[in-house]
Structure formats: C-alpha cells, structure tokens
Amino acid sequence: MLGVLSLISVSSALAAEAPPAFDATYSIADNHGNNATTHKLSDGAGRTRTETSINGGKTVSIVDYPSMTVWTILESEKIITKGPYKGDAEAEGAALMETLPDATICGRPCTGKLESVKGGLKKTYTDKGIKIMVQTTFTGGGLSRTTTLTSLSTATPAAENFVVPTTGYTMMAR
Image 1 (cartoon, one colour):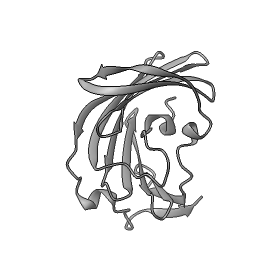
Image 2 (tube, rainbow, N blue to C red):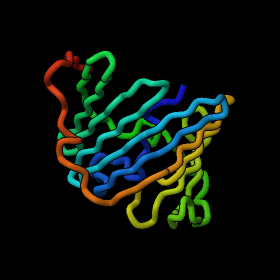
Image 3 (spheres, rainbow, N blue to C red):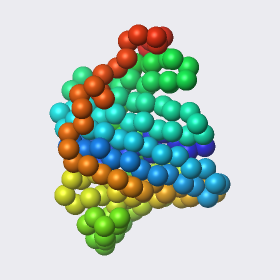
Image 4 (spheres, one colour):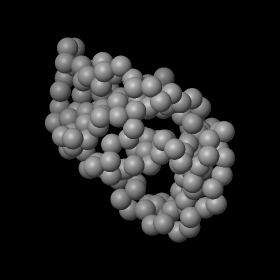
C-alpha cells in the first residue's frame, strides 16, 4: 500500500519552516500497479492541507505549524484524529548519500538529492524557486514508487481549505 507520509513530502520538513503558498497535485504510481492522487495546499502562513485519494477512499490531513498540531480526517468513517505534529518522520531518519546534478523535472528547474531512508533509497527533486517537491522516487523492499507533480499554482488557496470540520464527525485524540 502507498504510505501517506511518503506521499506528502514537502522539501521544508522542519516545522519552523512552513512552506510558501501553493496548490499542487501529484500522481503516485508504484511497481505493483497501485495508483493514487495527492492534492497539497499551503496557505503560506503555517497551515497545509493534504488530500490523498487511494482506491476510492480519501484521507485529509491539516497541519498547523505554529501550534505543531495535525488533524487527520477520515471522510468515509466521519472520524477526525488530532495530535501533535512531529515533522516529516521519513525525513528525520534520512541520511544524505549524494547531491544530484541540477535537472529540469516537469518543466521546472530542480535540485536533487539521494537519501538513505528507512527501508530503502529516496531520490527527490525540489523546485529551486518555490522549494516544493517536484518528483520523488522511493525504491526498497521490492517496491518502487514515484510521486510526480502534475499541476501547480502559487496563488494562496482559500482559507476554508484549512478549517477542520466540527459537525458530523467524531473527534479522537492521538
């Protein structure tokens, strides 16, 4: 199965560095025939929203960097979990192996790096200007998964995208 945390990498993984404003869509495919789509938004002021659709289901995560809080919304189950945001778990254990030559990926000038991460290797290309992930490929344990930017807007998304619903959901703490 495609790991949600792996799908939502943002190059500025440190909580103190909230990503700039953007609205991006990524396609995800692996060597086992699994496909998914991730829609990632940032208000540029410390809040991100990630919507991941896999096999007809949808998971939404809203991160508030200033309060270090994350809400995970399971729409089909009408459940919201709230807990502390601990940063990008995958990035925490990563060891830089190699800085890759600059490249143009999806028409965007990028910097690249190869890292050793839990379970394998991750090659990531990050946009030089806006500093968001353009493409990442994970290989390890019989899995090869590529996440690729398919659309990008640098306009600030509407504020309602970052509001956690309160009606019709069960709230649970992590």
